[in-house]
Amino acid sequence: MPTAAEMIRALDLKPHPEGGHYRETFRDPRQIDGRAASTAILFLLARGERSNWHRIDAVEIWHYYAGAALKLSVVDGAKEEIIRLGADIHADEVPQVTVPARAWQAAESFGDWTLVGCTVAPGFSFECFELAPAGWSPRR
Image 1 (cartoon, rainbow, N blue to C red):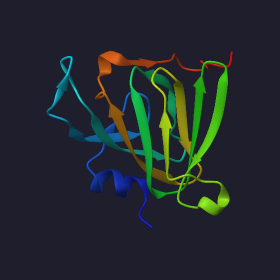
Image 2: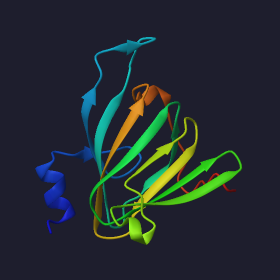
Image 3: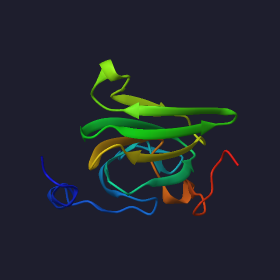
Image 4: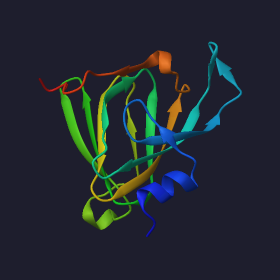
C-alpha cells in the first residue's frame, strides 16, 4: 500500500486550513445566488493529522475512497454522533454520510491514512467556513 506522502504527491494535494490535505476536483459552473451550485474535493488525513472542529453553511456529503476507516464526529445541536466511514459494512462502517448544514464536524484516520471525497451543496466557500479555535470542542 502506498504511504500517505506518496498519495499526497500522486493526487497533487495541498495542505487544508482545517488539517489534512486536499484538492478541489469540481466546481459547478451553475450558480445559486452568486455561488457554485456544488463543489467536490479529494481529502486525505494521515496518521496524527486531524480535521479540526469546523462547520459550513451547506450540506456536506463524505465519501470513503481508500485506506483506513475514518472517524467522523458530528455535533448537530444536542445530537452527537460518531460515524465510522469506510468500506467494511460488516464492521459497522458506512461508505457515505451526510453532515447537515451548520453542524460541527471533525475527523481523523483510524490508520496510516484515509482518502475521502467531500461534496458540498451549495458549493463550498471559505467565506462560509468556520474553524473552531485549537482545543475547542462543541461538547464543552
